[in-house]
Structure formats: structure tokens, C-alpha cells
Length: 245
Ligand SMILES: Nc1ncnc2c1ncn2[C@@H]1O[C@H](COP(=O)(O)OP(=O)(O)O)[C@@H](O)[C@H]1O
Ligand SMILES: [Mg+2]
Image 1: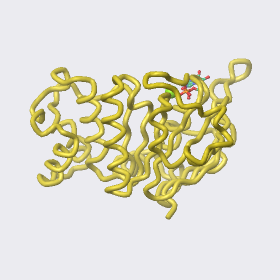
Image 2: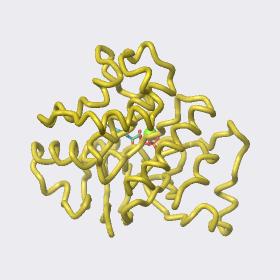
Image 3: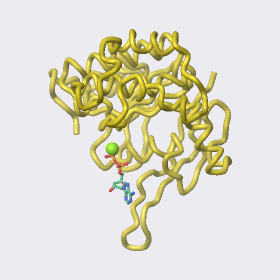
Image 4: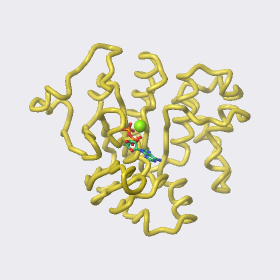
């Protein structure tokens, strides 16, 4: 079952001499429950792609279908509501609300949507994330890894069909990175969520079903990591902390 379909997506920033073709005719499809990585050099267009796919940015041309919904055919208000209910975002900088504790941060999207948190669901998420004993802590009282786990909880609370993550382990040490990856892998398996994740860390890519590489705005499907023998030159596995930039 198709969850994400991207058709001929292009994004141009600026005008005239300053024009930047950040995305060039990008097309791909993701199935329900698939977990894919986006890799590529800094400035290649990865974040632009993710932001357009999630409706945070508007493409210059092309279409994005999420669970059959034509994202940019919706007016802005409807798109915002659709996004809140169907797409979970995780960012490198966590973006937690400093004044709210862990539990309040996780349930915040529900409140925005005018819904009451289900106690069982909140407990399950706190348990899965290993944050049950930190529920009343403020973000400033948490480690980076714990803050990112809270941000993942906030992405999971709406049970979105699609999760978009922009270098979610970029600010974490290697142990916390593995933690976060494990949680995401578990979520994609357990809740059959489709996950698209930008990463620089090639060690994390081995857990994923598929790898996309973005080069200067052009996307290439590299296939499954372990099946990627033909691409071993460009997908070399580094040691623990080695990063591909
Ligand atoms: N808001 C913007 N205005 C103008 N140019 C931008 C904007 N956002 C990104 N760009 C440019 O688009 C290109 C792709 O950027 P980005 O998607 O952030 O790359 P990546 O996430 O792969 O590092 C870069 O050349 C960047 O400078
Ligand atoms: Mg980026």
C-alpha cells in the first residue's frame, strides 16, 4: 500500500542570478511500513525535500500524495490540520517547548487538535521511550538523548502514517543515536509507520529498508543497503563515529 508518492518535485529558491535549484524533478514512492534513509552532502537539498514532502515548505512544481491526499491541493488551513494528524516530524534541534514538561510536550499535538490524551496511549509511549520516570521533567532537565526521545513521543502520539526526521541523531552521541534509531525501527514495525529519515551517519543506514541519495537536488534510489553491492563505493560503511558529510 502506497503511503507516500512524490511526483516531479522541484524547488527553486530566489530569482535571477541568485536562483538556486534546490530540488530537480524528484519522484519516488514509499510503501506502508517502509523505513528509508536520505543521504547526501550538506547543501544537496535533503531538508528542502523533507520540508516539501511534509508540507512545511511549498514546492515550485510537482505533487506530493500522503495516504492518497494531494497535499498542495489543500488550502493552507486544511494542510496544517492534515499535517498535524498524519505526519510526525522529528528535527535535529528537538524543538521541545521549554515551559512544558515531558508528558505535556508529548501530548501537545493532541491539545492543538482539540482532543484529550488517552491515558493508556500516553503511558505506552512514555514506557516505550523509557521516559516514564521523567514525565514531570522540563526539557532543560533532560539529556540530549532524552529530549530527542520526548520529541519522538510527540511525533508518535497522533499515530501518524508518515514520520519525517531531519538528522534526528545529529546532536546525539553514538549510544543515544542507536537508542533513537531502535525506537524508530520499532515504531515502523509495531505501528506500520512509514519513516523517511535524513542522516549523515552511515552506521544507522544498515537498519533501513532503502536508501535515497540526493546530489545537487537530484534524488537517486540506491535500493536496500545490504543489496547495495553495486554502490559500495558510494555507501562505504565507516567506523562508529565516522560521518559522511
Ligand atoms: N530558505 C531558503 N532560501 C534560499 N535558499 C535556500 C533556502 N533553504 C535552502 N536553500 C538552499 O537550497 C540548497 C539545499 O539546501 P538544504 O535542503 O538545506 O540542503 P541539505 O539539507 O541537504 O543540507 C542549498 O543550496 C541551500 O543554500
Ligand atoms: Mg539539512
